Length: 463
Image 1 (tube, rainbow, N blue to C red):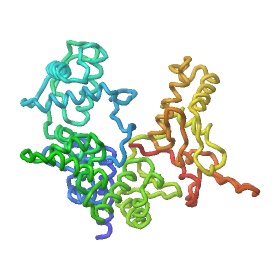
Image 2 (image 1 turned 90 degrees about the vertical axis):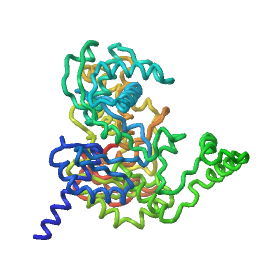
Image 3 (image 1 turned 180 degrees about the vertical axis):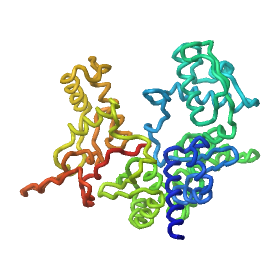
Image 4 (image 1 turned 45 degrees about the vertical axis):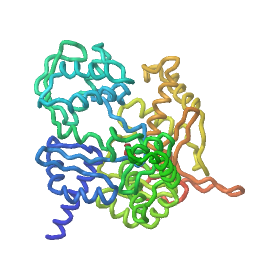
């Protein structure tokens, strides 16, 4: 009886971990998932803090939980999406309006606000803020504002009380919202307050790994005000010297335990939050820790209800239940994902290459153009002179977001995990030897740990 109960508890906790990975801010609307999270809140807080250094806030009284995920590596593929029939990534304008709305809400003493009042105050803030375009009630601006407001409604920061009309299409439309100021205060997950950080690097610095060490001239200049006493005429000179020492040594005073903790947290953050952990992206110390902690990482993966998949090129955590999966690939009738899959099928070599293969961008455009010519009724929005280039760019962006390709302005390379979509898998034979018989790529058994590919899957986790 005890063993059954322990298994049930482990299963509930594993699901809670994966729910939080997919939805770092959840509330009572999640039903039993939120109830289970509250019941096991202390264990989950310890687990996330120890394994990956993330802070989990569980506010049962106000009905929400917030996992402050700090990414191991900043990515341009982790943006918010619009809540529309065809979700699209937030533009810079939508992000700036989202920040302006948050500023308005944080400065609002009342528990409610109307959409008209919100729009008027956003207009005042943007007019008074340098570097941000003034908000005007044009239709495209109203649509962008509505997308930002809807995002906050989805997060539970705003709750709809009453609506009248469609603001995107009618400037006179209005709505009334309740404001959850506690949830608003937990939106920012940065370890260091952005308003006090002199740079993005400082904002992402975590003191648990050692003191802050500025690495740029701008950072060195900014820290002088903190290091130099106001009544010491030689203070600025001493501060500059100290800043240079900090910059030269990286993180002074860092202990061996802090270095191990940093390696563990970065590895687990990549495994839990990114599609793939490529070994060549790790430092020498991190690779050494990885080899020493194989058993522990496998146990942590099991605690999260996930399967650790190891290959010569890298590791991945696979969620067999798709709970932590926030992006599926391929998926239904998604045109961009179909084009990305088309590129994988057309450009991958028949045999596993000895190293990365570089492609110019026009290789992808040519594949898409041939498909468009062969099927004039397919992808009508891209049946234009610049259509192949636009669709190829979107498909490459999709592959980059899934860690299946490394893309730059000139070209791209398919990464090892892209091999899971190869119809057949075979090694390149050494010179003078016959090539071995190819192994089926879509098999249920494990692929040997060698320079081949990741095992097949119908979906891939994305940030």
